Length: 110
Length: 110
Image (tube, rainbow over all chains, first blue to last red; front, side, top):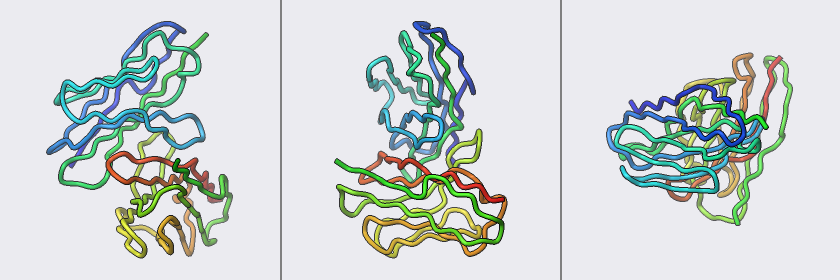
C-alpha cells in the first residue's frame, strides 16, 4: 500500500526565513508526486507535479524537488501570504487514486 | 478555463436525515470525478471515483452513495446521516494525473 508521510506537522517562520517541508513516500512505482496548497476552509490548490527523480519545479517563492524516496518543498523568503497547509500526494503506476499525506501547516509571521 | 462548483458551502443536518451534495464542472468534457472527505487534522480520504456517466467506484464501504447523472455532474448522497459523517467534503476533477479541487462543503451532523 502506498504511504505518504509529511514532516514537520507544523512550521512557524518569520517573514523572510527560508525553510523546507519534507514528503517521504513509499510506492511500488511512481507515476507522479503532487504538491497542493490548502487555505483554511477551502479546497486544495494544485501547485506542482514531479514525475522523476532529479526533477525540480518553481513557482514564485516555492520550489519542489524530487528524489527516489522523498520530495522537498522549499519556501524562499516567505511572506505572510504563504501561510497555508501544504499537502503532498503520490500516484503509483498500478493505481488510479492519489494517496495524500496529512500535510504541513506553515505559519509565516510578519 | 475549467471551473468546479460545489454546493452548499456549509450544511448542518441532524442525525438520521438525508444528504445531497452536488458538484458540477464547467469548461471540460469527460472528466474523471472524485469525492473526498477531509477530517480535521487528517489527510484526504477518497470516497468515490467516476470515469463516466453512471460509472461509480466506491472506495470505502459506508452509508454514503454517489451518482453521476450527467457528464459534468457528480452527486454525493446519504439516506440517513451518522455523526461520523461530519467533515469537509471535496469534489475534484481530472483529465490526466493532476486533480483539481472544488471549494468544498462543510457538513456538520448534530
